[in-house]
Length: 157
Image 1 (tube, rainbow, N blue to C red):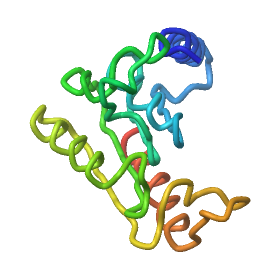
Image 2 (cartoon, rainbow, N blue to C red; image 1 turned 135 degrees about the horizontal axis):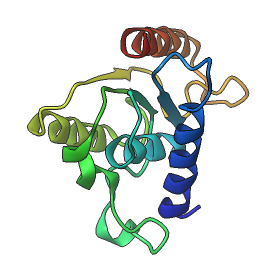
Image 3 (cartoon, rainbow, N blue to C red; image 1 turned 180 degrees about the horizontal axis):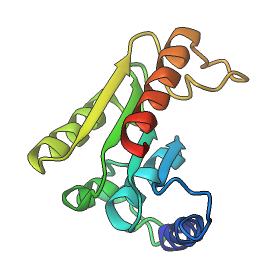
Image 4 (tube, one colour; image 1 turned 180 degrees about the vertical axis):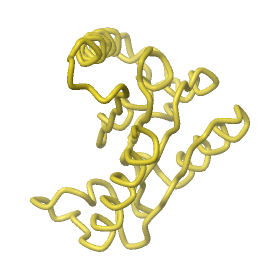
């Protein structure tokens, strides 16, 4: 999906959640793979997100030749606009994002003075949370889920 449509859908969902009488007052977002990229982009460009988690978000860092009409800007370029705390979970064996991409993203977050935590797991690559795929890594997934739940507990309650 094009970024503008995805961000429009997400903003609509956030706005709707905020109308619900049982909402605890805060909204979090989490995404995996391209969804991790979209969660990062949303946290930098949309209103009303109180905590974000990007799990191995490929494409946050993008070379010019990777940009398209559907994805015209690399999300890292919006880092200065990040409006909420961000948790990032990665595998050292991943290629998208590579450890170098993760380091570039972390440097951008540090330079912008943003609140974030990054965790990179040894012996894990892309999709280490996916129990139905060969890339699943139980130890990384269990620790990752603990970090996800802790992050939302700290920033949404």
